Amino acid sequence: MAAQFGRRMAKGAATAAVAALAVAALSASQAPGVTVDGHGRQTASDATPSPDATAEAGSATGDSPYYTDLPPLNSPNPSPSPSASGTPVVQGSGEAGIPATVLDAYKKAETAMREAKPGCNLPWQLLAAIGKVESGQARGGRVSADGTTLSPILGPQLDGNGFALIKDTDGGKYDGNSSYDQAVGPMQFIPSTWAWAGRDGNGDGKKDPNNVYDAALAAAHYLCRGDWDLSDQTDLNSAILSYNHSQDYLNTVLSWLEYYRKGTHSIPDGTGTVPAHRSDTGGGKNSKPSTPKPPTTKPSKPAKPGTSPSPKPGGGSPSPSTPPSPPATPTDTVDHLADAGTAQLTAMAGDEFTKKISTKAVTKAGKAVAKVRVRFTIVGDTDATFAGGESVATVATNSSGVAVAPALRAGEKTGDFTVRATVVGRTVAGLDYKATVTERAADTLTRTGDTALTCTPGGEFADQVTVKATYKGAVADKVAVTATLIKSKDDATENDKGPYFKDADGKTVRTLTGLATDADGKLQLPKMYADDTTGTFVLRITTAGGATLDVQLTVAAADTSASPSPSPSASASS
Image (cartoon, rainbow, N blue to C red; front, side, top):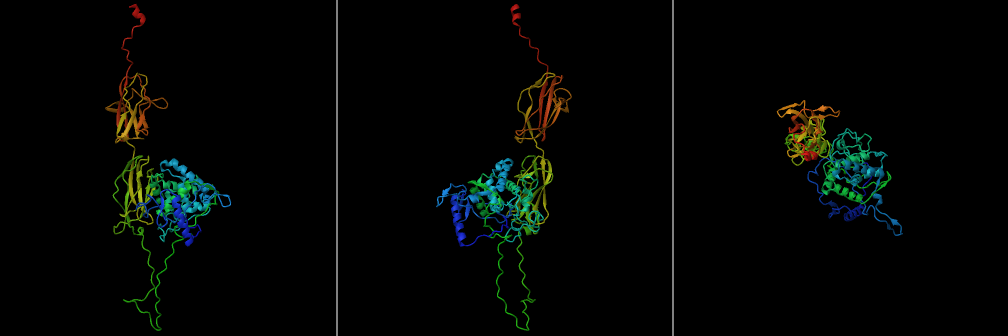
């Protein structure tokens, strides 16, 4: 959440009382499954994150501060009700309005995701809810015509002082800070996340976290990266928690989501309202929790003239006290990464790797380190991705110090590539894992029909050969196939006579390459023709993986041995 919004959190008993009443009323009128506990805080049913989900794992924002303002109690589109003077009054419309360019960015991102990952079921209202909580809809829509914010929106520097410790990962490219990372833009991405999640949403050839079209599309992909179905409440909760690991954050976003689902409308850019309350209790630039005062000590009596201060017990001169060093974070204690039992990584093109990469963070003494963020990056000439279509994934180590990367999915490119594990926020040697993608294969080929394949010399075969490929009993799709007319089952040399195929120019060919099975594992070969040679011939069909099928072909003259039936005239004359 931006730290340069220039707003201060309203304080005082009156504000607290109003907020408590608002939360209580909101629970009765807003999100399904959202209730209020005994302290007036919202809770969501089935929304408790898993221990690993709430650990210091990678998140879009680095768990930066966010706006905590709740939506109005009134419906966004209530029926006009007369005021005391009889004038119709529509309440709630101000908060329901979303700046035109920002709203357009959300809707375009939803459309793009409906095409790219329809199973995610991402609603644009979710992006609006997150945009409201993260930046107040780009500070009320203060964006240019192309969607770029008129001034930077930056969160506090993540230096470990009241926030997570994330040392600089972009050389200050996005946040202008070469010491620590800061969340950037209307959707508040930290640079290390933007490096892999960034998207070009407005088609200008750039991926700019300060552009609402780019940021909205990136947020959409981020929320859909884990193969979640956001129409399912559990998956929706998990996706939101992955954006910021906070139960209060989840509840706030869910409240705005349900509010926007009830209706909203477009308002001119720059006229939106900016929230006033933030999770870090302040609103100024790079605000941080107040620094605790040092402990008060009783002043010592002044020394008598002509005397020197008494030495410390044990000897030595008195010296000014040195402030204690801040405690080391888990990341600071990591000495190296070690493999945690990763098996051989091999998969056929298009398949998911059955094994996952496991990496362990350890100290110099070999002790496991929990709550350390490990980044897994796919390196090399490959189109393999992690589940969700990304090439980078950040995972926190569990209580055993182990981080398990998301499942890998092979693309269509075959060969070797590398997955590199590194520690986020600390310079230690990376750990490389070799992965191999093999070509799609089949171990069985069968004909889909059993009609005898016959032809007369110089004619064409009436039926085309159709085969089906399987691998370990499952459909083998997109498998490369070769079909060759060979001399015999014992001689796989290409035949120079008998049946043949035709190429695009109508020329005779007896070997076909570049064929592939369809999504159902099937392949229909082109028509075949026969020259004047009669006899029995063999068509051999082979696939990657070693599946082979021999199909018998027969070329024979038409059978004219049967005597014709006598004509009526011949019968009469006899």
